[in-house]
Amino acid sequence: MAQAQIEKSVGKTYTPRNIYLESRYRLAQLNQRIRRAILEREKGSVRSGTYDDAHATKVGDFYDTHHESFMRVYGSVIQAFRTRNVDDLLDHQIKSMGLRPGQTVLDAGCGVGRPAVYFAKKAGVQVDAITISQKQYADALSRIEAESLSGQVRVVRGDYHRLQEHFAASSYDVIYFLESFGHSTAKEYLLDVCWTMLKPGGLLYIKDLFRRITAIPKHRKQISAEVRKINESYRYDIAELNDVLTYIRQKGYILTSVTTVDLKLEDFEDLSISNEFQNLTGIARIENWRDYVFPVEFFEIKCLKPDYDINQRLDRYFLQHLYHRQVQSEGEQPGAMSTANGNPVKATR
Image 1: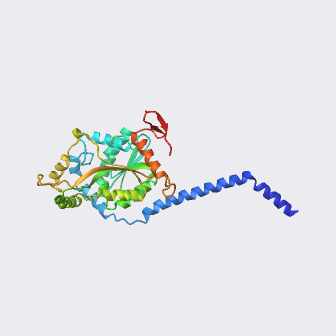
Image 2: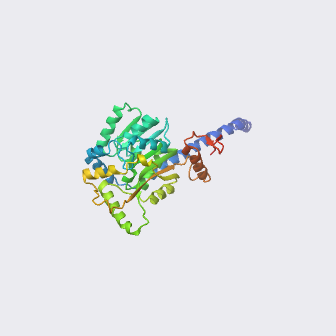
Image 3: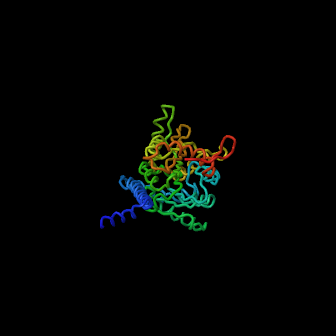
C-alpha cells in the first residue's frame, strides 16, 4: 500500500508539465551562473593585472602646472590635431562615433569638459567623464554647472586606468579618448579596463598620435629623438600603431576601422596651435623648422566589444563585423540595411 502511494505521488510530481517547468528553471539558473562567471572573469582580468599609477600622477601634475597656458592657447578643447573652429572638429567626432540620443558614453581623459558638454547638448547623450588633473576637474565642474547639465554630464577626478572604481562595469555604449590615450604607459591594461566598462556591442574610439614610420632611413634617428622629447616633455607615451592594433585584436575587440582624421583641408589648423604653446612655455620647443622631421601621425581607431561570448560562436565574428560596417557605420538605424537599389532590408546577426 505504501509503495502504491509513493508511485502515485511520483506520478503527480513528475508530470510532463512539471518536468518542463523544472527544466526551464534549471536552465535559467545555469544562464545566470554563466553570466556571473563571465562578469567576474572580466573584472578579474583587470584586478589580476599589474598597474603602477606613478606616471598618471605625473600627468596630473603636468596639467595642473600648465593649466593656465593650456587654456590660453588651446582654450577648452585640448587637442593638437584640430579645426580652426573647434565645433567643426567636435561635429566630426559626433559623426565618427555615431553618437545618438539615449546613449551612455564615457570621456576618458576629458580635460576641462568641453567635448563632454558639447556632445551632451548636440547629440543628446549621457556623459560620464574623468580627468587626472585637479584644475581641469574644477574647471569642468564649473562648465557643467554653467550649462545646467549636471543631470546629463558627470565628471570625476581620477585615473582612467581605475574606471571600475568610479563607474559601473558594462555600462557604456561608447568609450572615447580624444588625444588622451597616449598618456597611458599601460595600454594593454587600459584596453582591458575599457573592455570591462563597455556594454556588449559597445564602441571604443581612439583619436591620437602615433609614431611615424618613414620610408627615408636617415630620418629614423631624428624621429626617435623627437618622440623621446615629446614623451618626456608632455608626460606622454607615443605608441606604435601596429602594437595598439595587436593589443586590440588579441583582447577580442572587433576592429572596424583605422583611418586618418578626415577633416577638410580648408578647416585644418595646421598644428600652429602646438607651436604657440611651445613658444609660450618653452616645452619641447622647435628651434629649426627647416630641418625638422615630423615624428607622429594622427589616426582614428574604432573597434567593438562583441555582443557574444568570444569563446563561443566563432562564426559570428565576420557577421558582427559586416553588420557594423553596413548598418551602424552608415548612420542607419539598427535593423535596416540599404541594398544596391536603395530598398531597406532586415539586417540579421
